[in-house]
Image (tube, rainbow, N blue to C red; front, side):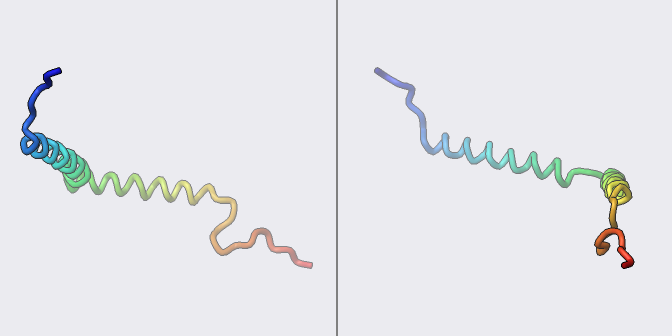
Length: 69
């Protein structure tokens, strides 16, 4: 019943390094884009929002068809 002896200090440090690497990778994806890529992404998002708004049946603030009775 002999198991492998592990150094807890090294294990904690290795776990912290892997967690830090995961955060760094997420930051590289989030912030690691060029200005042109950011502007293109922003333009695509704006276009998608305008197209979605263009398909609305009623505009914001409208209560629907006005009834003149």
